Amino acid sequence: MARTNPRTKPARDETTRSGEQAPNPVWFKPVMFGFMLLGLVWIIVFYVSQGQLPIPALASWNILVGFGIAFIGFLMTTRWR
Image (cartoon, rainbow, N blue to C red; front, side, top):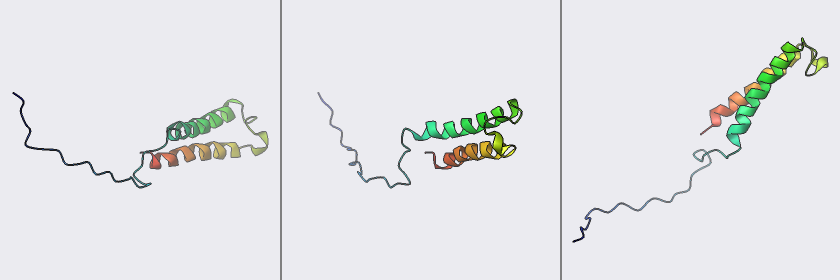
C-alpha cells in the first residue's frame, strides 16, 4: 500500500540572480591565477637575469611592473564567487 505524503515542498522561487550574486564565468579563475603567476615570473626573471630581462630599458621599474601585474590578480580575488 502506497503512503501519501501530507507535506509538500513549496514551489521553488524562480527569481533571476542579479549581477552581484551571479557566479563568475569559467575564464575568471584561470585569468586571476594567471595574472598572479605572470607577475611572480616577471619578478623572478628580472632577478635571475640580473636586470637584463624582461625589459632592459625599464631597469628597476621591472619590479614595479611585476608587482602591478600580480596586484591585478589579487584584486580579482575580491570579485571571486
